[in-house]
Image 1 (spheres, one colour):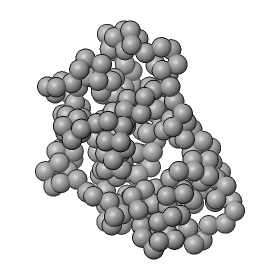
Image 2: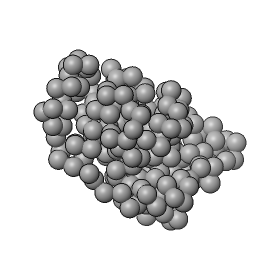
Image 3: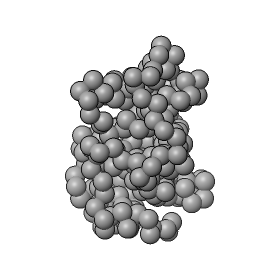
Image 4: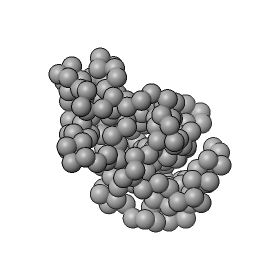
Length: 210
């Protein structure tokens, strides 16, 4: 739940990686390359602890990160849609590590500070257009009921084709797994990451499913 001061699994640092780890982590090259660049510059960048945790299990990492790379970069959904889904899910799962990491990605995809605030409040917050609200509602329904309701599905199906609907399900599923790893391994935020303000963290930890 949220972040912690001490990880349950110590990071497997890049100085210890061999070809096996590099090949496995290379299934999703961007995060690995960011960590390697930060390591060479003697600084720890956001996301390093997640990558260094995956490095402990190359076989699993290669399999999962292949899927993660597709969900993050290759799906038929727009980057903004993906980040809406990921941010709402990480908020519901009380995963500060994932939420903080994806704020920057959301902004690169076109979100405003107001959007980030509204994601925390959910699909019924004032200011969403109907499509964005239904994307968030789909995440809430999958997390609460394991299934998107018929009414929400019908509205989404009017805007998304079959491949996009499937990608929506699997993006949420992918980042559910990632957030569960981060929560259960007690990943702390890197020193270079910007934590949530105290009031936002309190809201995250106190939030309940509608």
